[in-house]
Amino acid sequence: MISKKIEKLLNQQIDLEADSSSFYLAMASWAERSGYNGVSAFLYRHSDEERLHMLKLIKFVNERGGAALIPALKSPPINFKGVSEVFELLLKHEVKVSNEINKLVEHCLADKDYTTHNFLQWYVAEQIEEERLARNLLDKIKLIGSDKGGMYLFDRDLETMQPHADQGI
Ligand code: OFO
Image (cartoon, rainbow, N blue to C red):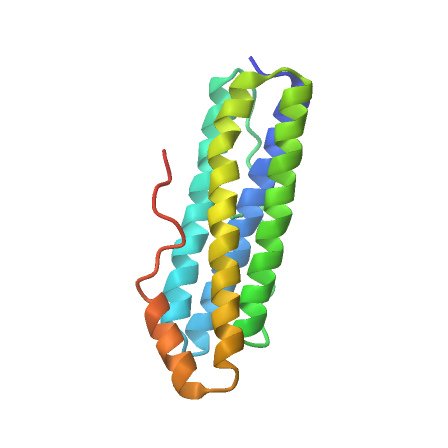
């Protein structure tokens, strides 16, 4: 059984994962409208993964005797200045998510909730991967600069790139 405090913190994390999913969905939609088919496909997949992260938390909270709260949808932005801004925002968002996961882990240790602590290790590892990938993509975008051919290849590469493979659900 999880404590009320941990239940509340996990529900906040559910909200943040839902937020990630709709933020990346908005980015995917913008990329699709802007002719970046590969970037768009990548971001649609990323959005789906974030929804799975949310589901995984919902199931855990309910299984541990808590009540998962299904978050209301917020409105993400409609337009972005370019691919570079999209990935800058994505990285910034992932860093925020990592910080929140780390805080959650700290609270679990302080509360001696080792079950939730163990469950959260999957998220800790996932955040390392997601941050690494976002940094890597941003580095590539910086290298490409204003080279249209480079951006064409970048977009093509993202068509099949996975945000991350194993969802562990
Ligand atoms: Fe849920 O991994 Fe990104 O935010």
